[in-house]
Length: 181
Image (cartoon, rainbow, N blue to C red; front, side, top):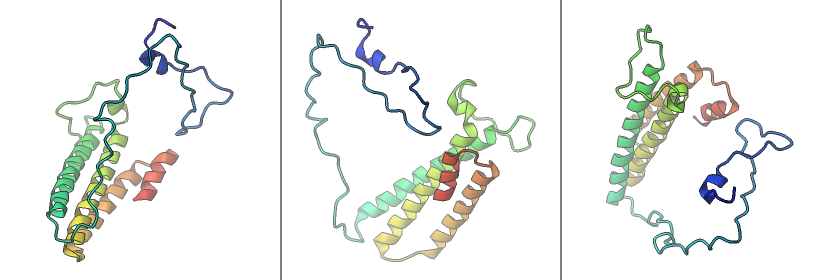
């Protein structure tokens, strides 16, 4: 194994430990030892040492950034909603009346194909979060609560919940997402 580059050694499967982790639990695999003959890794470039850019503090309520956030997250939500719908419809059998094939379907052996219904529900959940943030940014900017927006959000929330409950979330992780909503 000394001839293999480190990037290949790091990703090899480790032999099973005394007990396998349960579903959803991460395994604590120790990092493989680095041979002493290798040179040390290069110092990080200045771009990697920059701090994470955080949102500005003390924004005024009328700041134009809130309008930009509203537009951006509303558009993200729309893309995710339509993607989730299209993926959901593509999971039905071709004989089903609601079946609609994807324009560019994933390969049949890929996880995107095998777990299409779960990915569709996750996209809908992500869309729900984007829409919520979009509405919140508008309300926060105007220092008001626009109830009409929240009523449409509630309707989408119920619709998304129905998609999750209709699929009979089987694993504990899936039920946790339902609880999040």
